[in-house]
Length: 105
Image 1 (cartoon, rainbow, N blue to C red):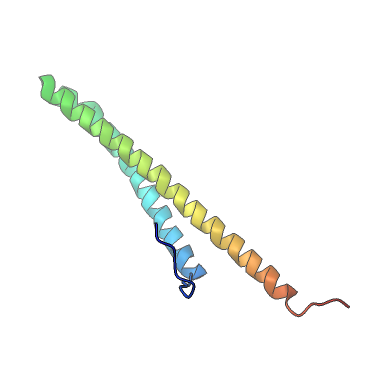
Image 2: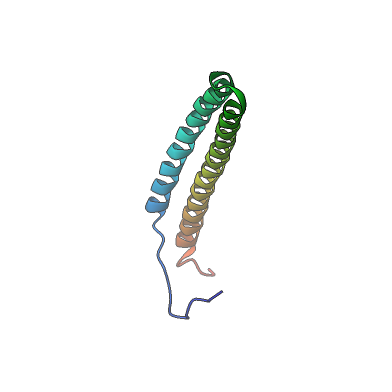
């Protein structure tokens, strides 16, 4: 793993991170809605297609629903982590800004 050079830096925009968190939250909600539809279809596939094909199609759809559910949950969690990180950063920034110039009296 390479380490950044001493002069390397980056800038994080709290507004940009908040916007990203919002987009991720919307994506998580969309994925969660899709999960319900996929599970519904998965339940009907074995009856719609006879034999092994029906079973395989149903199992595949059920696995896809599980994967989408996992992605929805992880995407929602990431959105929450980003939101919490920005909130903590802004609170710390405000506290530091408030303490600047205060010295011993």
